[in-house]
Length: 280
Image (cartoon, rainbow, N blue to C red; front, side):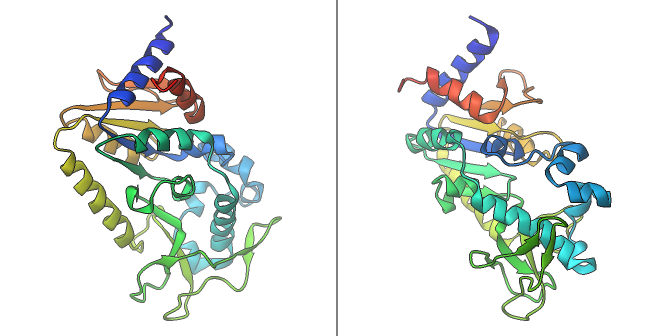
């Protein structure tokens, strides 16, 4: 048996034998759904050519200062992404994870740095998801008037496809009337309101504590080292007894000793694991 097949079989056996499942996901999870890969400036500019002309990278645009300096530019960037995430259907790897999770007597949770709410769209319950960087589907006041977050469900952004600038009216705070912004943790962001994410974190902590030594498997998909929030969480939990990590990554599948690393896209690897699961 090839080494890759052996690792896939080992992953399937670990997932099948787990009493609880933690799904951990980074940006690579959405690539198979057709979401753009922002790895490196060129990948970002291929997805958004107008920003190449402006010489602005993803890291420069994903900065809260634009909501003060140039709200049309800021909401053009986030408004386009909001519409894209609303239109995108999760690939069937999400359904596999949901099926495996639903069968676990100890339950499941999702920990993700993604702000796209694709897990909820795929049928995962809102109360079982921790979005550590927030959600583009929720808003907050850019002036921090004291209002909490609110859903962006009725918000539409008119974005010029040629310039990727948003046309007015721009989203406003329902309390003070000033500009609203996504409830997303951006780079250099001291104004992010983390209350919603903290509540999710507490629910996940309570779930982990209630497992009391039960066999936990972490299935980590598409979480790289450039934004290491997910990988750090996964590896930190390995200090917990009876915990196993299955890491799926197209470029960075290395794992600590004794864990399982699978090189490839999330959907392809999850499909391969499914072929070895006892249900098949």
